[in-house]
Each structure stands twice: as structure tokens, then as C-alpha cells.
Length: 297
Image 1 (cartoon, rainbow, N blue to C red):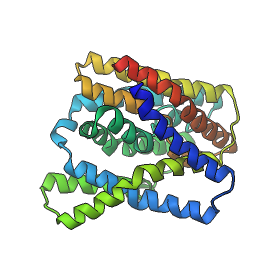
Image 2: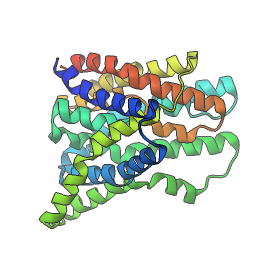
Image 3: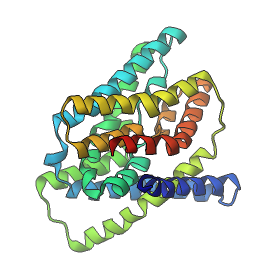
Image 4: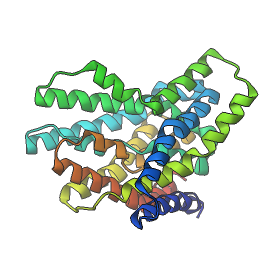
């Protein structure tokens, strides 16, 4: 029951955003403005305040990172090898099977179910999550198509406001900087708007997608919601990871696919597959997440 009490408000906000756009009750410029403010101001501030106050010594554990990123890389590589052999070209499908929506879905889930003090484990993974996966995907596409890797373009895509918020928070934490109380209060107010706005923006974005069922969509969704979290849960136990950290990693792996994967679609077929898989994994996560959390106790 506790799991559903934590999950239902999250998906209700996503559904509200979906409804507002689907019914045309919000003009496009309003949606665009809210999305810009959310991802360039609210979310970076939330991540900054969280990691600036976190106990980084507890989060930056090599075993913690290995327990999450080893299964992630295994899913990414195996899916890409299989798809590349069948299609003869680079695709973003391996990214779709391994990239979790850990910011919009993961943060509120971990906070509601495990407590805000457990966010330190999530932040530790987030520092490397997009950097690692987006770099790998860009290198894979470049090697798979014979293109030259553009370091400037890669860095520009990686160092977005979300990453900058994390890095700036880590810098304040490591240096032990003391910020004025008024600045912290302002940051906390901005951070409080981040999650509800982000969840509604996610729903607004999903309203633009059309579900195109296919074998690839269902297979990718199954890998993302079932196989990937199972590998993380198994490896965390094998490595002797503490139960709280293992539960956080399980939640992160079990989150639906993040919408950022659509930026790597290069063909109409990839766009249809990715948008359908993001939509389906987000809907089915309402059922799969309670099952995983029941397993985690």
C-alpha cells in the first residue's frame, strides 16, 4: 500500500500534464515556457541543493557505481550488438533499454519511499549517468557510421543545465563553501517547484507521441522494466551492497526510459520506436515498480 501511495501521486501529475495538452487547454507557448523554466532553472536548482548538502563520502562508493553501471553497460552493449547485426547500422535502441528517467521519476520515488537521506546514492549515480551513456552513444554512432567525433559538440550536449547543477553542487560540497541563508532559502523555493512541474511537463511531452506497437517496442520495454533492474538487484547482492543503497539502485533501474533518448533518433523508424517505448514504459512502470519494491521489502 505504501508503494502505491508514493507512486500514484507521481503518475497523477504526469496524467494531469498529459490531459492539459491533449485537450488543448494550454497554448503551445505556455507549455514551452514551463518546460524551459523547469529544465533550465527548477531542476538544476533541485539537484544543486541536494548534492551540495549530501554526504558524498557515503555515495561515491566504487561498489555502488559498479553495481549500477556494470548491468547498464551490459544491456547497452548487448542490445546494440543484436540490433546492429539485424539492421546493419547504429541505432539508439540500446540507449532506450538502459537509460532511466532517474530525475523526473527516480527522485520523487526515492524521496517518498526511502527518505530524502537516501538521495545521496541517487545523486552519486546521476553525476555519471548522462555523461557516460550519452558519450557512449555518441561514440557508437560515430564509429558505426564512420563519422568523426566532434568533441566540442559532444561537450555541448553533455554539459546541460541539469549536469551543471550537479557539478556546481558537488563543487560547493567538496570545497565546504558557506552560502548566505537568504540564498539557500531562495534555492529551496525554486527546488520545491521542480518535481511537480517536471512531472507535468513529462505528461505534456508524452501527449505529443503516438503509440506504434511493434515487437521492438515490447522487447525494449521488457528489458528496461524487468531485465535491467533484475541484473542490478542481483549484482548488488553479489557485491554485498548495503540494503538501503541496493534499494535505491533497484528503483533507479526500474524507472521508465527517459525522454532524452529521442535526441539520438536519426530515422523516422527510430523516432517511432523510441517515442512508443518511452510512452509504454512510463505507463507500465505504474505496475512494475510496486512489484520491484515489494521484492526489496
